[in-house]
Amino acid sequence: MVMNTTDDNATAPVVPLLVASNLVVASLLVSSLPFLWRLGGTVLCCAIWLAAYCGGSGDYPTGCVLTIQACTALYLLWMTNPIRDFRHERDYTAPDELPFLRRVHWALCIMNNPRGVGWNYQVANVPPPPSESRWYFVRRRLRRAFYYYMLLDLIQCYEHQHPLFSLRGTGGPSVTSQGYLLRPVDIFARVASVAFELAMQHALFAAAMVTLGLSLPRDWPDIYGRWSDAYTVRRFWGRSYHQMLRRVTASTGKLVCRVLSLRSGSWASSYTQLYVGFAVSGLIHCGGDFMVNRKLVGVSFPFFISQAVAITVEDAAIGAAHRARLRLPAGLVHLIGYIWVFIWMNISCPWYIDWSLREGVIDVDRVPFSLISLVSSGTNAGAVFFYAILFSMKS
Image (cartoon, rainbow, N blue to C red; front, side):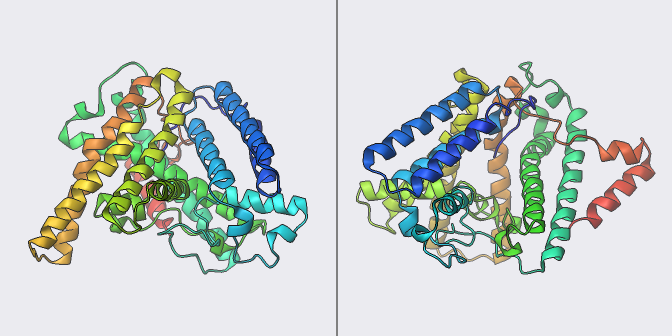
């Protein structure tokens, strides 16, 4: 879950530093260097990341991306050995036998494939790979990207007309002040805009990569799982929402369990991984806090760690129901679960949204021009036309 800012130029000075750190890390990963050389390379990367943080201009997503890159680099450099441990399904030659530049490319592919699609480290609960032909895949992804664009346009029009969002950055009201009917609508608008923007970007990038022949359709499973699976908070985060951070969060949790000598599969191991995973996710988003304002570091953390607390309570309730031999129809169980997730998100999401409204972090201009304004011109016929296009594009 990442919010945007209104400064479109904020990322400009950061991009070269991101590219430079990527190349340094990839070179370190594929080179058999002594410990001190690898340590020196890591220090150099830390200096690059620090320069990127200092060169940023209040852009929350950029701060998160920097922290993700730093965590990924530390994991690959110090917690595993990619040359020895990782293989892609289309690796026909061992990576250590490749020329240096091809090894660097191989390492860059690992660094920028957080879900591990097609690799032997693929994270859990990634949707099944597409099986359609190349051009059908491209057409479908472009249609899907346009569908998400129109959904973002719809949300953008709503936010432009809403005082809660138009007063952002002025210390205005909390989303909780909007009443029980409007509050979930406003929360959905914020959360959905993030989800739809990520989905649109993913669809466009997938279409471009497959069009250029740089990857295959099967390399691009959907970014999200089935939303119908989100009848518990655990399943919402572990199955339905994107798994882009799972490599870093899960590997850190497992490392902590090994350090503490916790038995795999035990209660202690399971909940240690749960809390460490959400703590790492919270710290990653604290990188966005830092980029926005040094004084805000930590404001994102309570939302993410609270999800682990909710899952703990949820597991306790499910366990109590099992011990009581409570038998309910599956449909009713799922309905109760959806209501619970809805209530919990209405409770917890304001902890993440309110501070961003106060600081003006939220960007309500996510699309460059409004198709709604273009086709409707204030007429009901135009609105009907817009919605007809919207739902015909969903596929």
